[in-house]
Length: 297
Ligand code: CP
Ligand code: NVA
Image 1 (cartoon, rainbow, N blue to C red):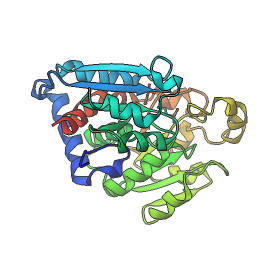
Image 2 (image 1 turned 90 degrees about the vertical axis):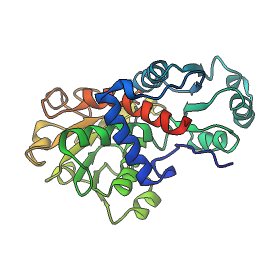
Image 3 (image 1 turned 60 degrees about the horizontal axis):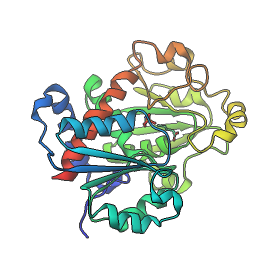
């Protein structure tokens, strides 16, 4: 149908992704530049909790003079069994764009296949591309282009890790990933990106001489029942000051948040000067604005 969707970072050409981030940097410096989206509505369907993503999207639409409608499965007919395909057909006749946070990535693909308007992945079990727009912007603002840099991912091979693999492809950086056995990212995704991505076991090796260290929670939304088992499996994977000391002297730390101090990251690292997590969180709103401008135009 020729509608542009943003389900993963690979859905748009790299040049468009970079343009969205550059636009976001410009909008952050000069919010008045933003194009009005008056009379446009963003539909939001969230099956999982959210602070940053929801507030970023809703604030972005408000600042662009548009509207947003927030739905959970519990308060829509989705929760009573209306098929995703039918929901997509109906919603996309009313709203101008839809952001969805769901479990199975396939839900997003089924919605998008039946939608007349752009669909944005606001996080699935497999990918969190909106977060990567903010992460790359944040790195670029502090250190310039991320292309050619070395990034260390320590922890779970989850939706964020897999989005970093896509980002390594889009922005051409080297990605070292250290996970415990059994928690690796998709083998196919790693194989498709083997020129840029290296899988490791030892978190120290993933931090060695990198420009950026990134981690995320050990138990993502949907895996809460595995929390205790995961805490044991990941006990050697906390990003500590000792781990950060192995990275380049000007290495930065990022985390999509929410963070668990004393689990995947020590309080010392999260609250240190080279931790840019609060800027990273703010940039969710600027990048969401730039993405919405791009998709709504
Ligand atoms: N980083 C992120 O997506 O945060 P929320 O779950 O609060 O939206
Ligand atoms: N990996 C985490 C990211 C939260 C923003 C989760 O899916 O819960």
